[in-house]
Every structure is written in structure tokens, then in C-alpha cells.
Amino acid sequence: MPTPPSSGPAPTGAGVAPQLERCPADTDVAKLAEVMQRDGGIILEGLVSPADAARIDADLAPAVAQRTPGFIGEYDDAFYGANTVRVQGVPSRSRTFVDAILLHPTLLALADAMLLPYCGDYWMSQAETIFIGPGEPEQELHRDDVNWSFAARLGIDLQMSVLTALGDYDAEVGATMVIPATHRDGFDAPFDAAAAQPAELGVGDALVYLGSLVHGGGHNRTADRVRKGLYCSYLLGWLTPEEAPALSLRPEVAATLPLRARELLGWSSMRGNPRTAVGAEAALHVWQLDRDDLARFGGSFTNR
Ligand SMILES: O=C(O)CCC(=O)C(=O)O
Image (cartoon, rainbow, N blue to C red):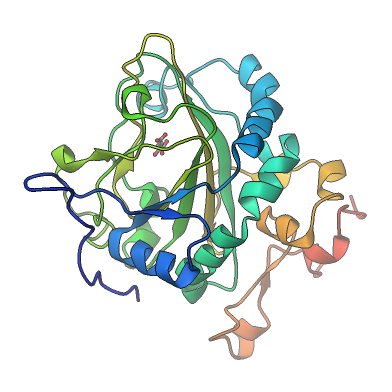
């Protein structure tokens, strides 16, 4: 079970709601994990270089330009944003995303610490642009674990998300609103929306948070600036990802990726938890193909 918080996040002053702690991205992972356990989120400064952030932004620009903001259903537009551009299929569109974010050693070590107690392995749930356009109102505050509400009530960590700034990410343009330390209150616990604070980021900084932390996209109060966030999440391997990364990953791209990236993108089978599995669970092999481990097909599914 998760460790209860030893103390809350540091207040910024008398009467001021607490803010998430900021740490350089090369901080010792044990310390980062401790902060994540305590506050439910953390800001990693300089997770990717401004040059890599610009490269990822440029890689995604053609798809972003083609995508109409908003969705179809009324609820979807209200929640996901009528003037917000969300493009998925990111690993096939940006190799820099794969190398600089998906496989970032600090993120993987943190995901190991937060998620491996509850699964044999985790995988990518989703990677998408969340480019919040001018005038977009604040998104409803929520816990991302709502996607897996039955599992969320087990009180274990299901998901770790990363929002990396590819461009403007200040409070005025819609920085993510976060309520620190709401991750241990329980999935159905009420929260005080007035306690939400903007998690402002510089280009290349990232907000990393658990699926149990209350948060939401901020209000873009500007007339002409876009809040450029790139979302990526790691999910327990026995839960269904939000995106279908195994399908959006093109085979010719998969063939060029390291094994760990293919595993995270659904091109590998899932095993039982090696720390606890015995008997049938030790033999477990789900998400398989012809009774074989998907990973053995390497970068191509030869039996298609
Ligand atoms: O864009 C953000 O800052 C957060 C978005 C989010 O939480 C969501 O769409 O579920």
C-alpha cells in the first residue's frame, strides 16, 4: 500500500495554499519518489532541453495544424476543451519524444518506484498534445484515475502522468491547476476547488503527478497565446490504456525503436509481478500472440 504522507507540501506563506515542490530533473530519484509519495506530484525543472522541446513541437506541428480543436459530444467538448488541440500517435510522429520523454531515465525510475509494487510492468496509457487555445475556460478539476474507477478504489497507485511544457505554460495561458496532497484522500473524497494552484512551467520543465491527484487544465485568459503541454502517462499493465498505442505505433517506426520503448507501447506481452508471483501467476503471459510473447516479434508482426 502507498506510504501515507509524512507531512504536507510546503506552504508558500501565511494563508497561502501549498505549492508543489520544484526539483532539478537530475535530483536523486529516491528523493523525488519521497516527494511524490508526500504531495502526489512534483515539478521537474529541465526534464528536456529547450532544443528537444522545440524539436518535438516541430515534429507534431503538421498533425496539430490538421486537427480541429474540440470533440464531438457536448461533455467531451466541455471536459476536453472546445478550443484545445489534442493529437495522439505521438511516438510515431516524434522520435525525440520517445528518446527524451518516454524513455527518460528519471521518469522510468520514478514510474518503477510508484507503479512496480502493483504490477509486473507498466505501459504507456497515452501521449497527446494538450494545446489550450485562447479563451478556453478552466477544465473541471478531477482525478485521472476516474478512467479506472473500480481499481482506483483499491487505494493503490494506478498511473503516473507527465505534462511537459513545449512552449508557454504560465498561469495566464492556462498552466495546470493542482491541489497538492489530494492523492491520499481517497478516490471519492471531496476537495476544495479554491485550493487549486497553477503549476507554472518553463519550456522543457514537466509536471509529474499521480492519477489520484486532483488537477485540471487552467483557464487560458489570453487573446492570442496557446498553452503548449505534451502529456504522457504510464499505467499499470493490467489496466487498459486511454489511447491504443499498439495500434497507433506504425510497424516501420516500431522496427527502429529500442525494446523498452516497444514494451511501453504494447509491443510486448505482460507478465505477473516478479516480486510476488508464484505458480499460475508466475507463468502468466497476457497480451500475447499465438501463445508467444509479443516482444519476440521484434519490430514487425510477421504473422500478420
Ligand atoms: O491540460 C492540463 O493541464 C490537464 C489536462 C487534464 O487533466 C485532462 O485532460 O485530463
